[in-house]
Length: 212
Image (cartoon, rainbow, N blue to C red; front, top):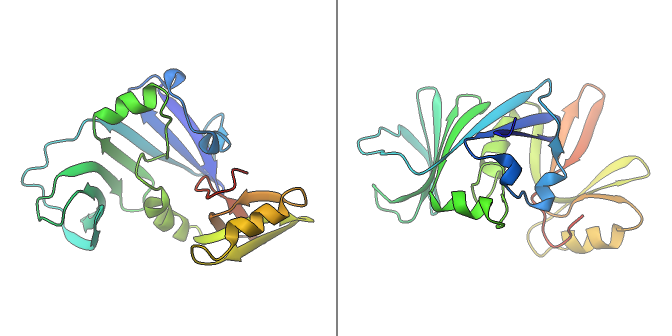
């Protein structure tokens, strides 16, 4: 199906849907490493629309976070992720994601110009086309006994290792030192998930300086 693509992270399959012909879309290399052939046992869906909707008079409900560029709110069974350009109450939108209660289904509206960017070589940068996928992955993972951590991750001698630290603490340096000795998962964001057999470490596409 030229209008669908699938990606898998920490055992969760994400189905991207769009009116675009994905055969003509370039995905960034870090995303392609997570691509899979089809749906899995646990599949969520992101439906992309290019062009922002008319939101005049929209009731966003209760605001749970607001700091440029994000305004996140909840109303009934829906979560609203808005990309805002100012602190004004009716700030101009850059993107809008409408997620269901458990973050397993969403419709995402992006500025029209992004349609050209992802179709002409700029590369599809994140599954949601948000600046980061972290904001919607975090609650999705929490429901699955998993957490997204600011860390460098690697597999050494069959064991998953996480090196946690703030920015500039040396996570990428540590990952670089392990190259050739361990399988690098990611040098900036990783997932720790508790499965029936214990905790496991999973990499993400949100890398820092180390491309592995």
